[in-house]
Each structure stands twice: as structure tokens, then as C-alpha cells.
Image (cartoon, rainbow over all chains, first blue to last red; front, side, top):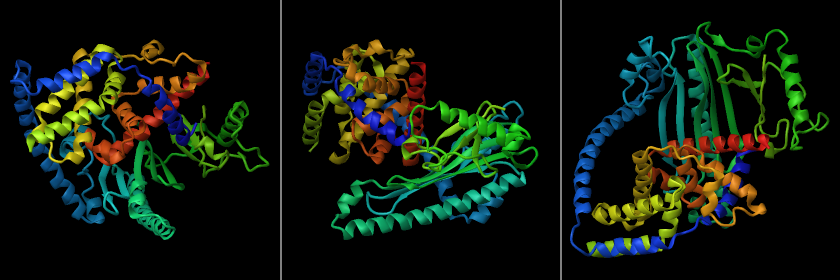
Length: 315
Length: 166
């Protein structure tokens, strides 16, 4: 099932939602509420007012907290990337307080705090209430060289994808306007480019996560980057590490079996350019169980409707 | 001026009350509770009407109240609401065979954690844009998307699991 597929399903299930029976009492009670508004203040509303005061207090406190956060965000934005790298331990990530998070991660008991942190979050629009770009950039909070290499790569990927997305969107907009579309119609499309990540699994000395970059109007621009790093041994984890010497044969056998068992008919046959063999370049992440999950790009071994097929490989 | 805004709000609330009820019902799975939630949300909206600045934001402003009211109902009653197929009995027609697929999808959506469920309902059932949802929930656009993608993924696995069970 693909993302496209699931959104279609949800759209058609809207009919079920709209069938929810509306009790007659609803109109009566709403009418009562609206009529009451003209009468004197009732007891319940006095209570509400008290609650309002309390909430305002909380809101004020939150606002002050928010102000702190904004300031920090600003600071990071003005900081050059190189400088940001150098003082990397102060991640803007665990939003409440990075210093706190840092302290926490030193404590052995609470050491389970994530090593993969949101380093920068920002979004902006390219035109008034139109196209937007959102970025949630991860970084690995570890001094291992392999982690630093991954961090540098991520920063580069994000910067490049962001620039490319701006170009793509501008070109699309130009073509759209040139063929008779209006600015408003284009804005209504809510074009976005998104960069974000998903932590697949994490242990004391191993992280596995995927960085996603995509544009909602053009699935061919979607890109994924897989990071599986052994922080203890300071290197990237390979399929061989997880499956042993015969990793290719083991993975191939299980993938072939899974494809053979599939009844959707979406997978290409070998002749049609379907699955051939796993290689050292095959993408994978490590799931909670510690097993590699090999992921193929959309269209790589199956029709687009299959999305990005995934296969968990058991050692 | 103030009464004018109040009138606008009253008209808005009356006009869309069915939609509010459906949303509330999606959280409470209970008729009486959903009625209470909508009523309380409307009361609060009228009471705090002055805090609403522009008419344009009335929709997101009210949905924010409504969602908060629904969630605080769940918290107060602190019972895990497990959607079962029989909860759909208040939804006529769902017993028909040709509705099977849609009903399954709907039931899967109801099983999602509230934060993901909310984003998907507002997006696909209430036709809100992502930036409207970000206003309703008071969270960043990327967080909205994160919840949306997460929710879609989760639904996919719920549906796939159910398909495998059969």
C-alpha cells in the first residue's frame, strides 16, 4: 500500500464520517447556548472566567518560555554552519533546554535519550500564502568521526535539496502561469518541499535513521538517505555486519520468497527489470528488533502503486 | 462592533454544528459526550469572543477550542476509548457490504493516537490546509506534516495487519 493509496482510501472513508448520525438534541442544545448568550452571566460562566484567568497566567508563562526559544532560534540562524558545527553540542533540538538535555544524556540512567537530535527547524514561504519549504534537520550528537561525517553530509544534502526545490518550484510556477493559470490557483495547490527524518531504531552505540526530502507535487523528486552508524566502532554498519558472510544470499532468498508470496501483482518480473539481487549499495535501515530492513525506491522493482517496498531480513 | 462579531460567530456555529458534532464524536465515540463537548466549546467561544481578532480566522479559532475541549474530555474521563466495529452503529449504512472497505479505513483512523487522528481528520474530512491545521493545533507546519506522514504510515500498517489477519 502506498501513501497515495492510503490517502485515497481515507478520502473515500469520509463518506462513513459523514454518515455519523446527528442527534436531534444537537440543534436544540446549540440554540439554547446561543440564546443564553443574551441573558445574564450564569454560574458556569463565572467558573469559566476564573479558568480564563488561570489560563492567561499559564499562557503568559508559556509566552515567556517561547520568547526564550525564539531568541535561540534566531541566534542559530545567524550562526554560520561551520560555527554551528564547532559548538555542536548545544543543539537547538530538544526544544525545552539543550543544556538540560546534554546534562541528562551524561547521566547513565537516563542515557537512553536520543542521540539523533533535531538540529534546526525552520519553514518559510516562497510567495504570500503559497509555496512553502519546511526543514527539520537532524544531527547525531556524538563525537565519533563517522557521526561527524554523516552530519556534514546531512547539512550538505539539506542545503542542496532546498536550493533545488526552490528552483523546481519556481520553474513549475512559471510554466503554470505561462499556460494560463493564475497566482491564486497556484497558491491553492499548496506546493511544499519538506525535509525531515525518522529514527528507525537506536541503542547505546548504534543509530539508524532515514532523512527524507520530498516535494508534494512531484514524487520523482523524493529522496531518502539512510544512516546506520555504529558509534562504538565509529563506522557505518553494513549488511554483512548484520547478516554475516552470506549476507547477499540470505537477503536475496528472503526477498525472492516475499515477492513470490505477494498477491498484489505489482512486482515486476526479472525480465521486466524487477528484483535481481541485493548489493553493497542496497538501502536499508535497522528496525527495533535489530534486523536490517532493505528498502527499494519507488519504481525500482515494482509498479509505482507499491510505493517503496520494504523487506525485513532475518539473520 | 462586538455584537456584530458575536452575531457572525452565532451564525457560523449554527451553520456548521453538524461538522462540529462529527469531529467531537470521533473522539468520544459517545453521543451524549459529543453533545456536551460541542455545547461547551460553543459556550467558550461565545464567552471568549473578544479574543478573536479577525473574522477570517474564526474557523481555525473555533476548531482549536473544539479540539481542546474534546481532548480535555478524554483526559477528564481518562478512559482509553477503544474503537470497535460496534461503535460504528451510530453510523447508518456501514453494515452494507459495499461499505466494508470504507468502514475498515475509518475504524483504522479511529484507532490512531489523538494527535495523528486530529491532523488526518482535519485534512481529509474537514478539507483544511496544512497551515490552517497548524493554526488550529498551535504547532509548526513541519510538525503538522510530521504527524500527518506518521499517521498515514501507521494507518497503512494497521490496515495491512488487518488484511493479513483475514
